[in-house]
Every structure is written in structure tokens, then in C-alpha cells.
Length: 457
Ligand SMILES: Cc1cc2nc3c(=O)[nH]c(=O)nc-3n(C[C@H](O)[C@H](O)[C@H](O)COP(=O)(O)OP(=O)(O)OC[C@H]3O[C@@H](n4cnc5c(N)ncnc54)[C@H](O)[C@@H]3O)c2cc1C
Image (cartoon, rainbow, N blue to C red):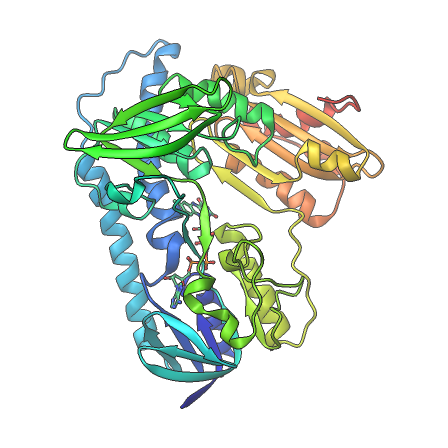
């Protein structure tokens, strides 16, 4: 049986660990069932944002009317938009495969692996042993147990990337970030979009008032139903019918469309890996349990990225990979700190958020909350931005930011100043005393902080 210093399972954030281990001149085995590069590069962030970039341009052209610019879009070439994305994803993947093949001291096992017994992984009927093992095997789409779903040709974030024809209409089941991002994409292209969300609002992880603005804005371009639970799906040659019950009045409704996208969340890939065979424990949802050092319940086995179910974003996975490397290879005891974890939602309008919501912060801290609308700063007024706003949640005693939330143009860029301030562990004074270019949307951040008050928002 081949023995390695390090086995890495998963080539998404796992590649960071491979690189570090090779830099330490360790023998390394990489196991991945493909597509090489993982979810972000092949099925998630990158392809979706390439598509959404086109959708954003369409939305901007249409919105230019409010500035007195009457523009007409003559043609939207669906295949061009999809092929640009597919070509780029394919080229990057091939480039990565070539890099892996040419790397000395790295043995790549292309196949689905599982634990056979202690520290032993079986892949393609071969058993390999590792002194240290990093589980970075990610997550996959969660398919809900809706009656009849398995009898129709539903789409997921994976299969949607292979569409060759623009759907005339689409029902999206789910109201999280993947659902609203693809809702924006298809609506911009002219597809009739219906979103069915069983919770009482979209994007549950966001501040309620952000979800409300998002709902209002999306509702101008698509049908959004919240509090609606999809219960049964039927298909015929004309398309798909979703039967759903409205939680408010108990009335059963039917929705029809050519295509249906399932976007209700992610499930762990730990089952594929049979982690129990090496004594690695999973939580109730099937994600691998880790401590603050990203160690699993088994010595010398670490779990990073989506597989540990903490905060499922690429930037988090990459930081976790470097923390795990520090602890496994540099003899450190570094704790993973999630307090300044940001994320973005590339809907239209865009959302960006970091740290705690007001509700969560109030449970453990005395807080001040400040808000500012884009229209309160000169550049926002110039842009005629009417609905966007920023919300700051600040610890009253220290002036440190606990959470910050923005909905509106360029939100994912604007929030970086706040992320840096939170990561540095410094107070809002730093932002308030720094010069901000006038006029620029960045003025939104200090203005929201000058509006701080201790009343419930
Ligand atoms: C539609 C969509 C959009 C997204 N957009 C964003 C975004 O804009 N920004 C952001 O930060 N995050 C985004 N995410 C989330 C992001 O993609 C993930 O958080 C990230 O890819 C997780 O990386 P990972 O390394 O943990 O897992 P992955 O990148 O999924 O890597 C896991 C790898 O392990 C392989 N594998 C699994 N099981 C086995 C096995 N048993 N044997 C061998 N190989 C195995 C898989 O095939 C995969 O290649 C998005 C996700 C989706 C689905």
C-alpha cells in the first residue's frame, strides 16, 4: 500500500493545502472525483458570476431610462453568453489539470474516494495511507423530498450551466442567494421567472429590511412568492407543474413553467467519503465536526471548506485551508476566526454583509445601529439610487463594528473598508477620521456611522 505524508481529498480549497505540503517537500496524494478545481471554479462562483455580469449590463441599460437615456436592446445571444462561460471554465480546468500532471511529488488519484479504515483511503480500487489527511470534499445541491420531483427533468446549479436554449419561463424553488442570483440572470434575459420560497422572506441570512428591499426590487421583474411550500411536481410534454401551499391561507396553488431550478441549499459530501470508517464524526446535518483549530474528532485529520458546514463560501474555505496548514504543518495552535466573515449576493440589487445581524448582536452585546441611504451621499444622488442603504451594527462600549450590511450598487466593493476595520480589531474612529473621496459611494460607510443611535431599528 502506498503511504503519503499528506492526503488531500478535494481539489477546491484543497489545492492550497497541496501547494503548502509540496513546499514543505512532503509526499502528497490528491484525490478528486472531478471536476478538477471544485465547485467555485466549475459550478459555482465563477460560472454564475460570468453569467450575472451580462445580466447586470442588461439591467443597467434598461434602468438608464430614469436618466433620460432611452436605449433598446436589439438582441441577447443566449448561446454566446453561455458559451463564453463554458469556454472559460473549461480552459481554466484544463490548465489546472495540466499543472497537477506536471507537479513533482504530487500523485493525483482521479476518482471518488472513501475511507476504508484508519487513515486509509480507497480510490479506484487502490488503497493509500496518509500520516495527515485533509478532508476538503465540499458539498452538493440539496434535493428536497418533493413528491414527483424525481420524475421530472429539474435543473440544479450544476446542470443549469449546460442549458443550450433560453427557457421561456422558469420556476425557482428556494429563495437563498443561489435562487435570487439565477432569478436575476434569467429575468434580465427575458425569461419569465417565478420564485417559490417557503420561509416568510427571501435571503434568510440577511437583515430583514434588506430582504424586504430585495423582494420589492425583484418583484418588479419576476413573481416572488414567500411563505409558499412546494409539495408536488408533475411533468408533461408542455412543461412542469408545481403544486404549492400558501402557509398564510392554506390555499393550494399551481405554478407552471418549462423549466424548474432547485436551489434550496447544500448538503454535505461526507456520506460519499464514509468518514465513519476512520472515526471522523459528523453533525446532525451530516457535515464533518471540527473544533476551532479545524481538527476533526480523529487526530491528524482536518476538515476545511464546505464539508465542515461552517460558512460555505470560497474565501472562508481558503482561509480555513491556511489555518489547518498552520496547525498541521507548522505546529501552531491557530484558531479559525469567523467574526469578520463577509459574503455577497450578486442579485440586482447587490447585497454585501459582514459579521452579525442586529438581532444576533443584540443577544450578546449593547449595540448602536446606524443607517444611511445611498441617496444621502452625493454620488448616490447623482446615480438616482433610491432604495439602496447601508446599516452598521456597532458595539456601544468599544465602538467596534459587529456587523455591517449593504444593499445597492457595488455593495461587495464598498464593504471591504469595513471588513478591514473589523479584521484589524479597531474602532469606527479609524473610518470616521480617514478621508473619503468626495463624491464617491464610499462616503456611505462613514455617513451610516454618524447616524448611530441606541434605539431598535
Ligand atoms: C451556484 C453557486 C454559486 C456560488 N457563488 C459563490 C460566490 O460568489 N462566492 C463564494 O465565496 N462562494 C460561492 N459559492 C460557494 C463556493 O462555491 C463554495 O463555498 C466553495 O466552492 C467550497 O469549496 P470547497 O473546497 O470546500 O469544496 P469544493 O470546491 O466543492 O471541492 C470539493 C471537491 O471534492 C470532490 N469530492 C467530493 N467528494 C469526493 C470523494 N468522495 N472523493 C473524491 N473527491 C470528492 C468534489 O468533486 C470537488 O471537486 C457558490 C456556490 C454555488 C453552488
